[in-house]
Image 1 (cartoon, one colour):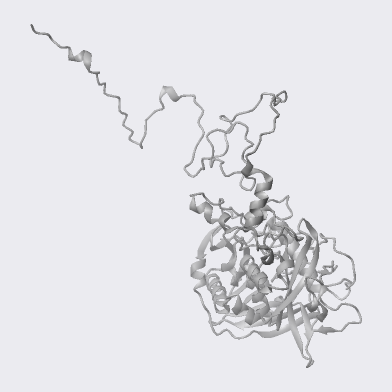
Image 2 (image 1 turned 180 degrees about the vertical axis):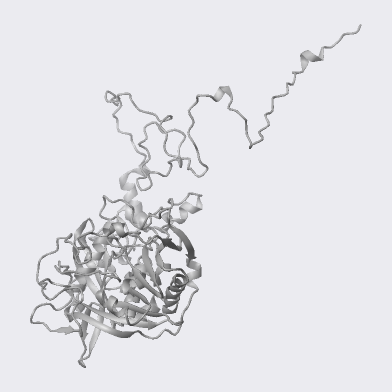
Length: 560
């Protein structure tokens, strides 16, 4: 007896799918009907995936990086969840306290801590019987086991890179001529540059008060508000440089502009300098009403200040605070008064007229020239802040600057009131790490001016949350050339970077140019800009440069 088997009923049939051929790219040629009119949120591979679902949007307590899980394409609201139910009538019925096991109760935990902390009081550790006791938060912060290495060990990413804004918006009609990266600039060198020769000296200097050398943490002195005008005049607005440009030199600048270029490889923030080439002469200027003269704070720190304008610890507010501290400190440490002796240069201050009855800051201007080779003669205005009388009667010129402490915990630094008298080297090393560019600029300015001493003051807030009151905790002095060697600052490299930029501009046609530090990359760019650029930014009344810094901080109005 034979039986026929129907194979078609046992095995499924295979239907060949329709394959679309896309000649212009890859993927389907048209959208299937199933996915039409369905909302779509763009997604980038760089976006972080934080949570599968967050119903209340309140569990993200990372206030420092609130946009860590934000989309690169912007936040869409088509998938947003809105919590509309009213839970005010919800009450917890079971209010019984949960009984903790014995090993989690306070008495056993304290006994364990007392046993583990035995013998640590003499080393500044946990002290349960003395006046100072470290809380658990501080112990965790100081414990190396809770450091940054743990995040990398378990594959956690670090904080997202901060995108800084450029000092000036690059316009469409600007032509990029050259890009100079820092690795190449660091290798440049222009040795055997001789000391500058004085062409003219102007201004009046006051003598340094040596009593400030005896200030320490236990004998601090409040920082006072000195109501004096500080001139920050650019190159082409200087009447002495205008006069000298007719007879000597072919490159003209100020010491602040030169220091910015020479120390450019240490800078992280964006800056820009306008250069005008007229024939065979170059004039380097800063733009009016900019933050060029503000002192940066923690620019080279691993964790720079956060960009929150509403906070007193934002980069701009800290820069304003540091600038005012520097100006007031440099004037407070001098012997003021009509009866005190003053050191006068050959010419008076070129930025005030005889009929003006105003108090001007103690400053001496030296107009010097340097031979840079290849018929390049640099003429620059340099500054002294004070003068010191030596036992032999000879004057020693000083550059007086101030370092400021704002919040050691937020800045990840050492506390000055604890370390300044006993470990001043550690405090200075921490400042060299966090403010490498600012200290290098001060050193270059002192070397260019020919100052005999670089006086550094340590100024701190009375309260870390109050940015209006400060105290002087100590002073320290260096010889500029020795300090440059100590901070690994090569003047040969500084002159080489400057000469490189001068040679690039000399090859161009007459016109206006701009060099700018990229805000997020270690690159300096040279742009060819129209001649009328920034002309509309100038003030009509011409009061921009002759106005002093306005009063911002309410220092004690005590006489020195």
